[in-house]
Image (tube, rainbow, N blue to C red; front, side, top):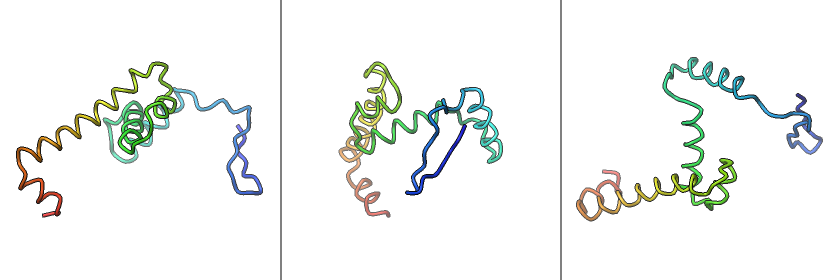
Length: 108
């Protein structure tokens, strides 16, 4: 594996580099989690966080689908539905408790 920084300062990976294997990645992930005292955080959690943050940031669904390497767009829509649930819950809170929603918005 060869990493080089070109004269322009951009990072380039040698074409022979095929990526990190699942087992090696899991070993490093587990070591990092142990180092910070976290025992219940998985690589799948990280993957889900990545997808959810992209959807929440308004990235197009197809872009998120490609980033997560989902073959079927229905798999990616799980993240969209999760965002919609959060938006719907916030809207219901505003309807049911308008004063508390206003206070929360003001930071009270």
